[in-house]
Length: 376
Image (cartoon, rainbow, N blue to C red; front, side, top):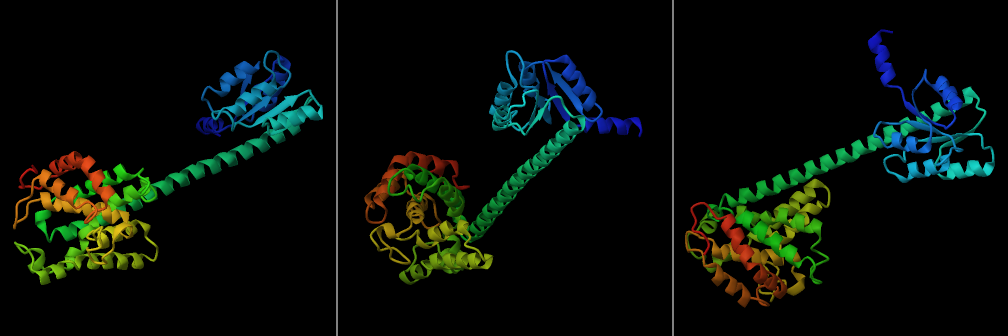
């Protein structure tokens, strides 16, 4: 074997710490182990703990019990009490033969108990056995850490795919109505602000969990995806819609919901990340008093996500400039939403909006459309 190979083999050797206050015992153990392992020695418990806590890896500790100041039991207890050292296997190597002493040592967490005078083949066999067990345990631990990281990485990738898919679909719909500009980003932020404001309200706390708020933020841009199915002569009309045209426009809620429902079925799973998207798409034009569309739902029958989107979408639609009308002043829109409390909108959502109205104005200013006038 060349010198390089010998050096590599030496580096791969496990490290064993021998703890004993008797120099002769240390000498015997070093002679027995040094050809097979890296051997470190400690003449007392305090030095043993310093070595174990130094950060240099130890694979096994051979520990005497009868030592001055700090006996082996105390050393073992401190080793097992620390997350830094608790996984190092400890074998008691002692002249104490009483079964109660052995029981106590094993209860403290030692993996084995060998009595003196030692049998060299027995010591070597049992040391190797526990080193093999530790190596297997370390391998499984490392593999589990790897698997956990891999699961998280793939989950992160999946979340990214979901977000990209949602934004791509939503942006596709918005390209047919290019006056809306940053409408998607603004409504996302409005809805998130309302959700976080209401998350501890007794009427909303069950639905507005951390996970659902994050999901709602991602799903919000899909609320108008059904507009891809509305004819240009209606969607892009530079003026108010006639009654028959408005009936066609109202179908965008059903078109969007149908597209998402079809996508969900094609996935072959419940696709929980699409649940809130379906809710806001289908129901964000429902009204608290039951006069909205498409289902004429009223009150708490309207999903929470859609009630939040109703306020967010209404606010943004009215402050934004369109080819057929200028955007309304912020204060006027705030007044309109306040007046619609209990008729168009959930009263508690309106109260949250009124407390957040300046934050809404800041969001509108932050994501103002290119070429549009600044919201007043």
